Length: 505
Ligand SMILES: Cc1cc2nc3c(=O)[nH]c(=O)nc-3n(C[C@H](O)[C@H](O)[C@H](O)COP(=O)(O)OP(=O)(O)OC[C@H]3O[C@@H](n4cnc5c(N)ncnc54)[C@H](O)[C@@H]3O)c2cc1C
Ligand SMILES: *[C@@H]1O[C@H](CO)[C@@H](O)[C@H](O)[C@H]1NC(C)=O
Ligand SMILES: *[C@@H]1O[C@H](CO)[C@@H](O)[C@H](O)[C@H]1NC(C)=O
Ligand SMILES: *[C@@H]1O[C@H](CO)[C@@H](O)[C@H](O)[C@H]1NC(C)=O
Image (cartoon, rainbow, N blue to C red; front, side, top):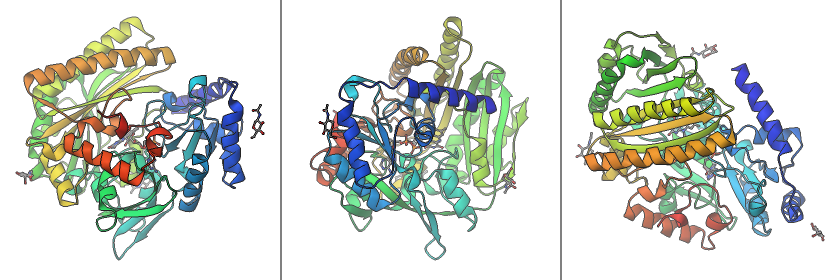
């Protein structure tokens, strides 16, 4: 772990040296001056606070060195930042936990003269209060909080929230994309448990969106991401938090076939056992080669419930971290190595062994090719996550979201690959290769009749089109809601980062 931190520090220092100062710096600096003149806290390049914040994006790819970072501390200051920036010529980005992996999803950019105006980052990290009402069992969460903050605050009250499975993921970015969690089979995706969003619109107006007030915006934000305004507070239904039982079990690669069969059976059995979560993954590292592992988390705290029998029976098991522990500790265990440039892709398919098999084979082939032509220093993980119809029945019951997965009649599985490299050149090559790998897999799945039209926004790379995979009805709805709440299209044109509904055909 210490090794990653050292490398991360070095990379951040390098990034600051690499910041260009093109001719129209004055224009963008005046945007930052305007924010400062409005008495907002502004971090400038060269300051320690700025370098730390820019260096804290999970993927090095997203550490872009903006002209400045503005840090509002409450909703009123977020509104002030929006109205101030609107009067300038600068574009801006909105940052939560900084975990979207591709460049410009959540960071302003100053390195390229052609995008000099995209120079400001609105950093929500200080809008992070968490409070809890024992009577309503609802948590009020500052949109810039990290899930670690949320779990730590809520566990004192014996409850937790269906949030990120890594502790450092941000609340608003996660929830406005969907939010798969350990409790999904019981309560649905994270977004389905949001009872109210407090949002700053492009006008500077502050609205509450819930089932009674602005219900269209409430629903649109459940998957619609950064297209309508800046979320400042999320009110969320909590779940009782006894400890969980679980951890990770690691097996040799030779057990691959057994794992594929076990996972398909696991997904189909979910309606009969909603307390558990299982994510099976194939992980490559230079030290261990590729191994298979399953992350098991039982929210009823039972050890080896019968639903897990298949995973229990696969032998040999190289190691495991199974134990009783808090939700927070389980998510800390799943925090991922930092200091890499990350390229992620995602595809969804029917719950069918061919879906998993083809992706596992594609990973093996990709890794072999990469090893033959590149530095040995890289990591590659692929995960499979259950997307059963039950999950989207929860969505419908809780008011609906815009993901479009309620169209599916069959249980589905989500595939995600993350490739982790050190250099910008390797990132470019990886993206080129993964665009092809993605296309080949989708073609094969389509041919076999097992492709599902859905790209999970939280795992999609910038070349993918998650909003475009939500189905015609949801796309039209999202365009209408964006137009209604942001008639000038500020969140399309002046906030160009992230997935944009205006870019969907
Ligand atoms: C290590 C790791 C673990 C993960 N684990 C899970 C998991 O268990 N389950 C899951 O479903 N996904 C998971 N994800 C995916 C994750 O949900 C997405 O990457 C999510 O977008 C991250 O949100 P963030 O706030 O940290 O990121 P950011 O990069 O800060 O933001 C992501 C997007 O949301 C927008 N945004 C941020 N804050 C706001 C706001 N206040 N209002 C409006 N828009 C905003 C940003 O502009 C950006 O476009 C994981 C990702 C990583 C890297
Ligand atoms: C730089 O901006 C200031 C206002 O912030 C303006 O007064 C000045 O003329 C600008 N200088 C140039 C060279 O454009
Ligand atoms: C969580 O981890 C911390 C630090 O290792 C430990 O002190 C604590 O007891 C753990 N919590 C539970 C519920 O086991
Ligand atoms: C989900 O809802 C559909 C439609 O109401 C129903 O046919 C299906 O059985 C439900 N699935 C589960 C697992 O409850």
